[in-house]
Length: 426
Image (cartoon, rainbow, N blue to C red):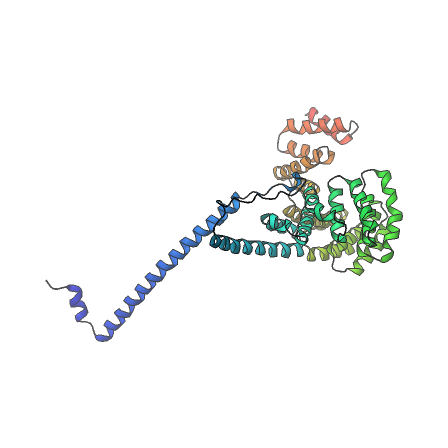
């Protein structure tokens, strides 16, 4: 029996046969390439999944729980890998360490300490093996709000006879943030004995200025006046911040301007100067400075919050309702940027709840107000907003409970008493 396909091809012209042949070859090549691509993809996905699983299974110790850094035990000869395996593993490990170190430093230089910390946590042992890397890691821990861990990391190098000024200052502020102000002052006193660096003296004054004992804070003033003689930017900044907390905004502005003049691109100097302008009711200057600081460091949740405070203040002062709405919207955007960086920022969550309550978004307001109340459990304005939100959604019992709690804390609170009487009258 004749082959129909053979008969079909025998009747084709030579050029048609050549065309069909080319099509066939192209399809075969595409099929081979597709199979190769699929094989590479499957193996790559498998490799990535294994890496991810290994990363998820790795747990890093809480350094704050140890007085000294734990040293891993050396494996017995039977457990040690072969020379070839050690070389391969060493290469991969070295690549990971260097890659994470580079990303940690890159993000720290860009003030993104949260991401810098995530990379550093993956190579904690590598960072602790070298004094320079240990100092970098301690600073990042301090910047991300882990002062206890920063103390544990920095203590080995900070207690040496010769310590870099920046490391000593980081150690002192980590001790202060850990609740050990007196220990921080004693530590700096020891370092000052062997160093003429006035920044150490300025750091001591700054820590005294934040001492829990209000009476002890008075001792900071004469130390600051001595430390600012060398026109150090840090000394001027810390003194300006100290004066601001005392309410002397004009004098604070003077010293903050000196700090910014010496280091014009330091974002926390610029942001603090913006605060001084805000308190002096120079709103346009404050806005410019806040935005300049955030352009350099967009990860500063406190400056985003302060920008929100500026816009909300302007909204409250607006004579036209349209201006008030626009400025309130800007304030809300700034507060939202703040909590996108620090989701538990208590005052930012409170302000968001306040604005959402005013916009009749009561359920959304309750979510943010509960976060604020968790951080500030006896804050009366937060509870007043929660009471207002719950009564609006029909939960009278919860609303009354908050009003009763307010009156327990402040028996003469007229707003809570009036609202409680109104609800009872209903």
